[in-house]
Length: 314
Image 1 (tube, rainbow, N blue to C red):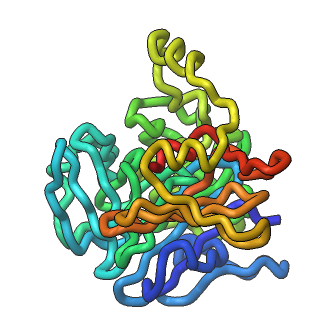
Image 2 (cartoon, rainbow, N blue to C red):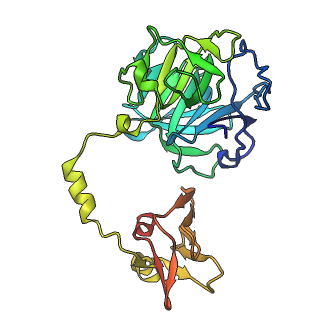
Image 3 (cartoon, rainbow, N blue to C red):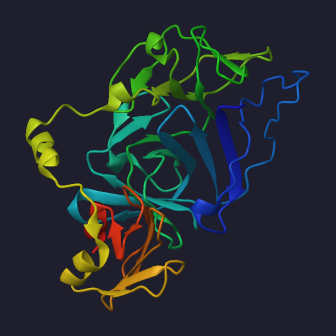
């Protein structure tokens, strides 16, 4: 099974409906492998986004051209990738790496027309608006004009698809926080590789301009916050009575039968959940998202129960 999936599509609908295609790699590589491995050769359409996913990583990468930048409140900027594509929020202290030379930049260095890769958690919530808007991005890579590979690399620095091998002497390797690490840290990890020319060998060989290791959770875990950990331990995560917690928050609950959706509304916002599901839809004048609760809504006798975090959406 291929572990690296790269899709190229024109953005005409929500990001959540995108179909993820096959991996793309250097134009100079010889693709005549004699196997039935499919390689994406479709030309990138105008106003499109490349989506890179890897089952070994908890992150997804969106690659495209910056078409709009908006300054928001609290030090955030919103970067739109392609005219009707993804709108990603970045805090002013977000890690921005330059694929041209591996240097660390700031969000102020992101410009219209620039090629960019935005790194998000694979389960990041996304609005159903056009363009879809995400929560804060983990990191971004600018000047991402070259070829890109997102795969797991073995001890010989060959990717899982056997299409690319890295020459590691003198290369720049970063973790997702933008800190310098060594080439050995690539081994066995999901890594985002930006590179230019490559040989026609199988696998193609290249010296990358930048490697970002984003498959190692231990490298991106924040320092322990004892105070916050203590607060989290005191949170009661027991299931709650759905009707009781919603009505106490000023909402009306419409529940007609076990097989029908449960509608929770206060006139300005409507939340829809279903029995035996953790899916949660929130709609209103300023919000329109699909979310996942920490557990399923379920029936306990005659009482509909919900995960404790349903209250956070009220």
